[in-house]
Amino acid sequence: MNEVEFHPQRPTIKVGSLITAYHKGYHVVTKLYVSPAYGSLTPLVEYYSLLSSKGTKTGRRVRTCHIEYCDEVDAGFIEDQYQKEIKSAKQKRDMILGVLKKI
Image (cartoon, rainbow, N blue to C red; front, side):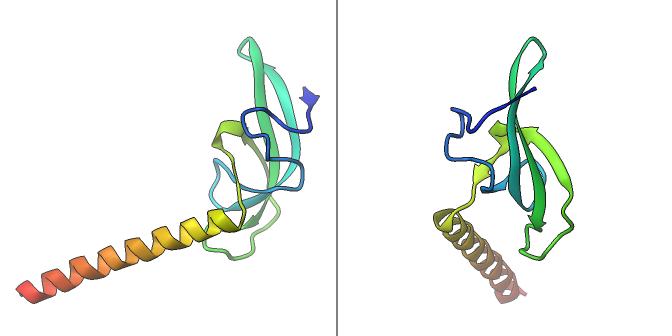
């Protein structure tokens, strides 16, 4: 296992970055490393949970996943998520109101 500062697949993710990962929620990166698995070097990210997917505090459970499952969280990412939630809520509202009009 070799620690690295960043990985070419996700060069903006570094130790201390806030990310989403394979496990739900928002996490803080504690280590980036490559591990010889399945005959090649597998890029892994170790992180601890900080917030649930709903934004509430969680315990600091340490987990690891492949870097391809990770996305860095920044203001633009959060704004995109917010807009998707608004769109989803509007679609749900419109569907329910459409059903109510028919009954």
